[in-house]
Length: 177
Image (cartoon, rainbow, N blue to C red; front, side, top):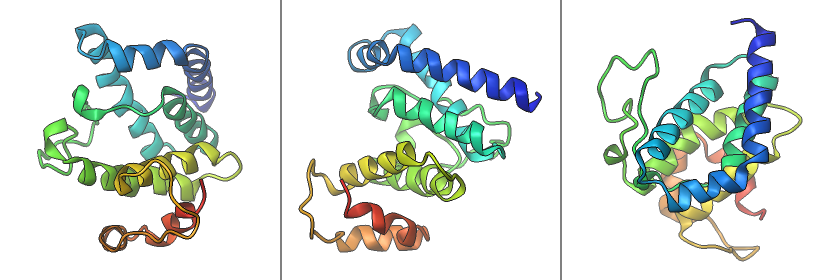
């Protein structure tokens, strides 16, 4: 599809999600087990994540990140995420996005290393939504709502982030709330 069509589609999707974010939240938190709701999020989220990781146009990546941010945090264990990525021929745990393939820690590290940090490093300008997403994932990983200003990153987390080569990008976001 042309760049104009992709931008227009993402702008339209963002406006729908933005205007309906409270409805999205209610669907996610209360009605996730209904087949129609599960189907919607099981297909929408991987498509948005795929756009974030494969799109070359910065504006479209930013719009995609905004869509994910507007949808808010989702408990992945409450619904499955289909993997209909065209390059997903290999059926490995790292390629599959089925909820049983990762525990919470692995999933958070995967989202940080494969989606959010690359997006954070590639966009300029409006990166607040992506930075906020990284910070929220770090909160989930550290298992705390609020961190003290001088609190250090746990050693196990440093090891995981260094193993994925994202420690340098994530570290500055740890100390900000």
